[in-house]
Image (tube, rainbow, N blue to C red; front, side, top):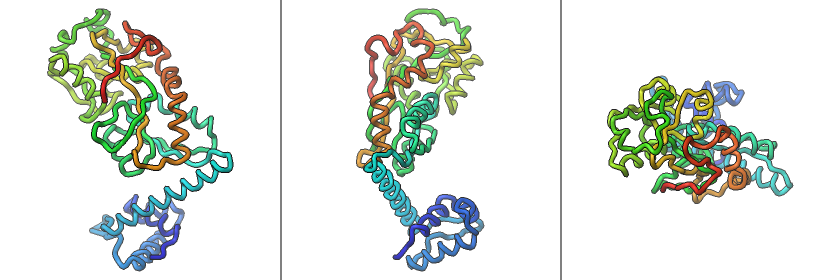
Length: 324
């Protein structure tokens, strides 16, 4: 097959949108021109790359292989540009970064600081739940991800760069607010508000109570940290959340942190990537940036109002780590 870089660009857009019109709009081309490129590629391949069923467009198996190859070509071309810029003493290129929804509270500050250090770098930030972030890493859509728990058995490697205390939150008028060293058993009749299955925060919460033989009875599942915070403020139940998500609500007196024995759980934030992947110059620089400045930036943003109530702040003492 003799394919041009432009043909690969056109086909990748069609494969991503599964729509000729949207691909044409993205590429500033006419729809007939886009269709013509795809037909030429099919003739060169000797196989159909797309098929239309009713009004919907689908990739054939051959089309999926071409899409994968196109992404590989684009990634290598982008990596080449970055490496040449690095040899010239410049930092240029792009960083494809994914973060879990809990990390979105501080991730923009990390991105902003990195961008000021390397103004020639373009950063594309994707925010999603943990399972989706892992899917995007596996599919090579992003090079680096930030999450609070590295999944056991997954084909990823993670490096801790900042601490992530998990605390029990309650409405300010809860009868246990102000109590010291609350036994977890006292919470057995409470309603607990949980994130979706697979969430790192939910897994940590379930493990904490399971280790102490306390059932999570009457639990309610909600889809985001913001929804859980609103539900706690409304008196619907208690929850365990990352300290980094609570600054505004604590400052406004809308949420309280219960001093539960064994909490906070001092976990970590991890920078995660595929272990066998050759990272771009920019991605490697970002990991180095997190290792050097990440912890200080996260604490500066998220601990402006002090450490978890009744406990040492993140700058004092040695936190107790929990396993991945």
